[in-house]
Length: 352
Image (tube, rainbow, N blue to C red):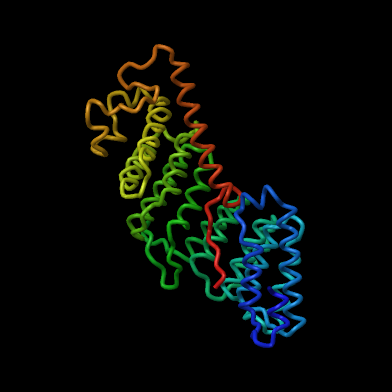
């Protein structure tokens, strides 16, 4: 079809024509790329050959062309990040694409992140002239992936908020965050197994809800539940309980399939309540006034293997059952996050 288009005098070839073919070549889910790396590498080679073909017949690539190829090179195991940088430099230098474009810059940040080039990601982000939410999310994603949390939070504070009197307010020159912005940061904190992590997560979550008016999505809900039920230091403090209460309250407004939200509440009962049963058995703070299902005497209709008032006499069996549920849930969350890359929250992809 492409050969016909190139040979026909009736077809006005442009970057849009080639972009359509390149999109078809490279638009493959991450999990498929991981399973079939050699196949994807071959597709990237073909896409690069199309780029050469475009240039040879004087069809100028556009922002979409360069963005897609940089992103693809980052995902490929065969092609190094230097190739992506060279393509970007060539077309910026000759004026084919503008310098500091946010789409190309975001793709470069993501590509550097996938190629273990944290410094390159920082340089690419700094070059973006008009930084937007998607670019910010991509950069925060890389910072958190490589343990540069200090840099990530500094960037977040500089571009999203200013701290004054202990309250987060919009800065004069700022990027408006979205749920992904907070998900990336909360996920990073949740991976730090420290008793104070829950407090930091709650501060961010409260800022998201109260300062910015952003509602959580199902991914963020699962990130927080996963962190609180991991068996580490979190999930035992009053602030952790308060965070879970608010998350479950907000989660009621999301579009869950039948039983999905209840299964998550069951997991928290099994794991969190099981770990601090002496504190909880006279004070069901997490679910009090939170859902009619848990206000009735029959609130434990879902058989979780845990009974607040007299469960199995075999405590090891109860603990093991809850632990198995936790591992199953964590596995499901990790599988979803892994499908986005490094066990991350997807920071977005744009062609235009």
